[in-house]
Image (tube, rainbow, N blue to C red):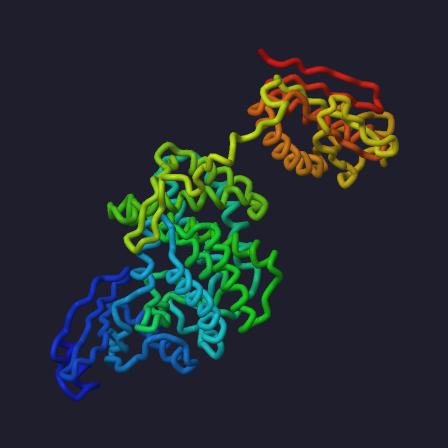
Length: 513
């Protein structure tokens, strides 16, 4: 502290009136508020890593020259272990968002406006801040690369995954990690990756203007990383709709600074970084919580696991089958069972209520019901057919159900060995399943059919119809109809009639007792 006072005296020309230590942040640096006779204050910083300090000092001067919203460096000691910077006050974005965070993600309009202002400012430091920057000064490395990704993924594996005692095949997981790392680094980027962009590292002045701090770990890298880091911070509990709005605000702001990819490409790339960032923070929580026994980090694990659960629903974005299966099993461990917490009220009047918002009125009358309710049990009819001969008629009078067109999938009927066979024959089945298109097609059909059948059983309806058509009603439609019939019978135990109209083949799967 004495050397910090000396540095201040050399810069100011007078000794400080007071030096007050500030609460510790996540780094090893110590912060002090130094006040002069006229009541003005600056921040003194003492860090034990010269390289880290040197990077922060260089980046701050560079960003200041670019007129970016960062503190100014006022004085630096000869050994760069101490420096002075402008005092941005004591109000961080994290502090201001406390009400929304502690009420489970119920953010009010003012908080949403601040979040919007911050996320729209992020491309400014990412794109404009990168221009003319000497990447070799960045600490501990100049660029986001495969090695740094693998380091973080292995950090997750050893500090979190192994601590849960979940069984996994290390070589298979390592192979998926390498594919994941390759995809994350597949696009070259010239932007500044902030690395630790979070609400704690955004300071607000009296007018609510954001200023950025603690970017000394930054490097050249993809801008998706910081968006994922900020919006998927587990403890913030940003609701899905708010996240989506803020991603939209960021994307539109990014257009002002650089050429942007298509929305679809942007979302797909962002999803990869959200998954990576989630694993990265779980590694940190595991080390700080499981090994250093810090309660704050242990308490942060459940919301991070909830984030992971939501990500696992986006399977199509993550072509890493073993890793995704392992993560699914991880979220199903008993210690990570999701616990639904009661909604909390806010102290500022933005409250929730246990009562229904829309109260009944005498003139509303009772709810109406279908005349078909409660008439069950349900019987499902599944048909295969040729489009040349028309769609099968619904004889139940129920109005039908679904008609699926199988003609977009690979047709075995184009090849001589299969022309005399049907979708019930082993060679055709093997052809279709080895090709794989029919499998993906039926995944979507199963999801839709399961929901519909489940609801019809609940309502007590009696009839539902599924039809699969292809060119000749011989191969793809027969395979699909047969497999859906077996799937529904096995899953729900209901009576299913399957008719392959053009083949004159019918079968009844009787209801299970």
